[in-house]
Image (cartoon, rainbow, N blue to C red):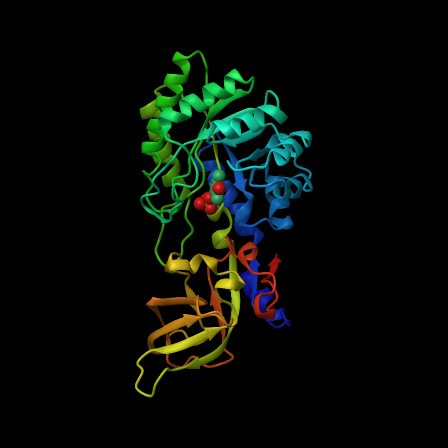
Length: 376
Ligand SMILES: *Cc1c(COP(=O)(O)O)cnc(C)c1O
């Protein structure tokens, strides 16, 4: 919790949960990433938090942007950033969205299949494409499954296909899984990337770029390594696999850029038990899975909680949201420990909520308005 957020919350009069993001923290995070890998261009993954003030602050610092849709591309262009600072990083795009992005000036596109290459070739002639490869996500608290990327061997053919269709076969990308706590998780993918560079070179195609993706963590309950540690590990893997021919690199931090910059203020709506003898209290907040805390799915992300009664004796509680959906339980398999003195009406602060909260909030489920967001 920063002093600026504390001061802001003291003056807030509106009812309902809100997230407050401190731009000074976002700026410090950007500088840490830029410093950790000084030769790597930073493309902020807009989906983590697309608030206009955050995009503007990053634009002013010189950041580039990884966009998932034409909607995000337009939000970035609205900051005044030129299209040369945008990557259309989604491997699943409608052809007319690729065309629209191309008309807006975007020239860098992600692919992971022949079919997507053909779409890009039809409507974005001579654009640069990079091929995403599969990554198992081991070590990540929010792994990304097999939805994105292809096998490294196939990537060589996908890039050759792009080359034959007149596109610029530009490089390779991967994502090691979000909230990746292992600084060495990039090594295997960088080894595959180097293999793809070699095989493409044998076919007369010289690739230029490796996109290191996101995955850089935010501190929730446990300490996480600093950006600097990731930078050192990644640089040493680049050296190991590419020798003295290190390619151009870009990175796409999302969570690591904004996660620790925001905090949610919520209110206790009810504290109750299921029977006289029940050891567990149920604590219901005015925010739940549908109000922005979707990453508590499977209890994957465990947010730190602060109450006005911290320091008093604690006991385990099930934590749940306010909606009439029984899936709206945040933590039950592993209960949270909250003060026995906690009372209905108390404000609870949820830390490290700057990423993946506002946009995950439902429009009006049960008539609750979407999560209010203040960027200060
Ligand atoms: C979501 C996403 C990111 C950001 O991931 P984090 O784990 O939040 O850093 C980066 N690149 C791509 C292509 C993504 O889809």
